[in-house]
Length: 370
Picture 1: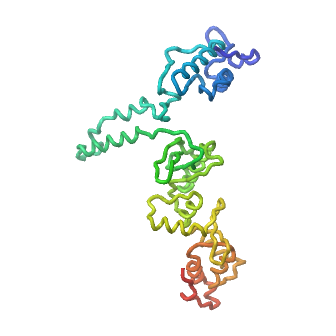
Picture 2: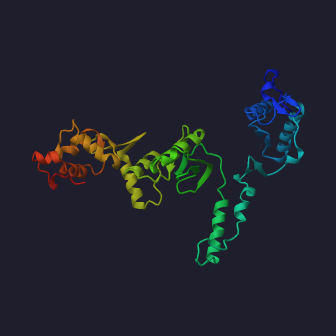
């Protein structure tokens, strides 16, 4: 089957050769909108069969069923439709009645989506190193090194089998960034302590402007990239973000437990019991964590990185008033909280030059016990 080009658009495909200029009357390879046009054409031909017994990606057809007889019946429907629409199949590229096959460069079977072995032959066939490039360095590559080298090749070539998502489970998103690339892995766990099943991988190079980002900005860029890449999976779903190397706030563990009911990895039994006990005093209201304090007032939890700016605002800003020993009370009146608020307020006020000049006495007894 060849797709006709509208006569008024045929001149746009003109090409020159020694015998003159010519234009296509049927759609050739290489046109900007040829792939999307062909995909729309094939989709319209098999519209009633898609998602029922077959999948189509460009010129790749996949017919499936739960049983051998049902598969033959679905295959008959496909071939009949090809005959009716004058679609010609290449017999040498057709594979019938198989339990696994290569689809879009991946090995697909009832196990899931795996890596095509032919694409990793260059790694598995790597010979053992036989020399080093440095001058006057003795080369040593005995059995322990050989075993480690083989293990490294196995790890590089045995990517986990990709699984379809379970919409009843939260998604786990692992992001990381280097000086040149961004990477992300989307997965799910069947339960607490269970291994993660990978759903999809994503990566891209960092452009020239992004090379100037700081390490923290690159890590945040990786999160933005992952959320955009996996948006169709994550929209409206609960997300657990893993592997963030930037400093985490003091309330990270309690926040994760309140939001997802999951304990941090390798947490001790006593720490888990403490989290469960403390959780009843905390409320998660995206994007902030709130604490119900002993005076029955709900206050917003402040991360360590913002403590100095909060104290500066409550004590030394134009509206602060240099409250000296009452700075901590001023912070609480603002509706803010962190565990060491009285200690930090004492330390901040004791170093205030203006308070010292007016003779305010600030001693350790003004610091409330934590």
